Image (tube, rainbow over all chains, first blue to last red; front, side, top):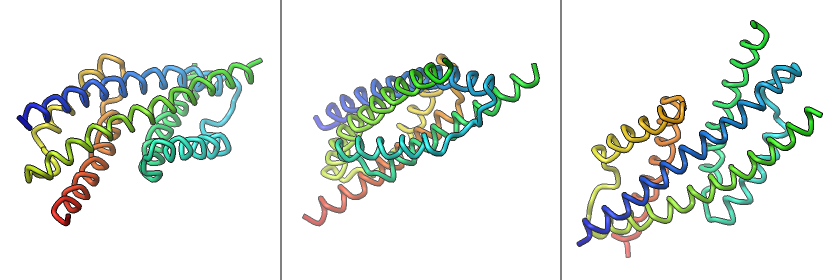
Length: 97
Length: 97
């Protein structure tokens, strides 16, 4: 009985994880365009002011949904670090081409 | 001109980030139910076999959408560590009540 419930929950979690990955991929598509724009304009890869605004906003949403703020910030940091890594690579490719 | 485009991209990123947080919150709702079930049945908080299957599946989706495998695994690890932290707390509360 409880094994069936566990299995149902796990199926739902798998569906959500697929959604999460696809949403992240969609996000990277947009940040890729941002990276190209920044490279073309010679803008720096990271933007601390923008990041501070994003974290403040994420904290508000995290509070609303009852999520741990440290956790939401760690996820955000992981994503933004990956974005900056992409931006730096794009800038190198742009200046090298 | 390019400032407008950047601003549009950023609005879209903000929308996706809100979706991401809400999806994660939905995921934690389900893992909370899993945590209660595990605590009631005296099952361990973590399940290495299940995690290995999840990582394999995430790698397949990440490959399909062209996402860095290390990155997708880091996000997953961060989420699962938070879930296990919740499970342990639930087990403590269950045994303490």
